[in-house]
Image (cartoon, rainbow, N blue to C red):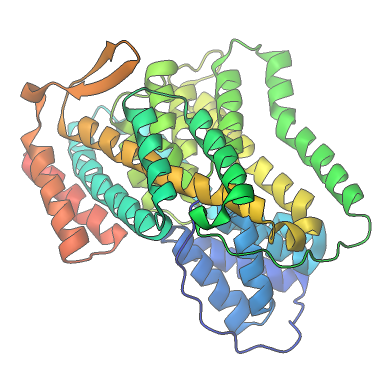
Length: 447
């Protein structure tokens, strides 16, 4: 997962951390859930202020150590950090409460927005609104690319991995999971042979393990594995494996395992499969979904809920479109976040030891470098589908290119994209302000 440059001030609570009541934990994490805008960096800084600085529930060192460990896991690191803090304070029930409260507010809001989008998608003014949203999203993704590249590509090997990942995706259409897993294996090998090529520091002595760590890990995997698989088993028995809900659950379960680097890293792959593989979305709608997710609290990966809703909404049998959409959104959220709880509860006893493993850090560093290339591919994909009405797929031997029909260039999108870049990079506007102004700009130009 991509490393985050989060500046955290020193905690004013160096003494033994305070243990809150379970009711206090619920109250504070409800507040965090509704205020967690700004992506993972803002969410991690918010939790640090609320839980370390102001309340002293978690020691500074423990917070940073857990954050580093969460970077090693697939899935949204901020949500997993919240789950670990809840587990640390009140065991399983605390972890479950904190993790759910971090997600539920944003999930409810993006669900409501998805319902509105599906019902109003054919209205002219809505299409005009989202023309501006798409242009703003293009600038936001380029910002993310430059920010992550500036931090992650500090050696020649990392820059080579990023370039190879981009070429593999953009020129050869290699599967996204292959890029992520292959980069991780390369990083592990390099870490064992030449860790300096990845700018890795020597590991510290392994920490002592708590009592019966294997029992905790095995029970967690069995319990959460069953929770993860339960809706899929129900769908297989009642609707069959040919139903769209089965495809939704299977696809997003796979995505949950390889979601290193956050939502930006998997969006192009998700869009490619949703548009070309399954036919769930039309080109450009993924940018609409990301624009909606950027305006809501909670993890950005909640954009998957938007995809799940539209997929089921458009193939609803035997349900009504609204009911099918709600089931698709709920299933997507379930299979996206159930693994997050499993990772945290299973690895919690090992957090101190695994956090110091050089080989594991090598795999993470290589994946982070590859994610830069993945996000560069996403940027190119968004640019093509935002600025051009038609993008052709060209195959020539092993090459598989997406190439725009130049005559289909949308001048309105070009003007709005130029405005978005000027406001994002020149005026340094916030995401919400940028989205709002560009959306209004889309309405004005469409008149």
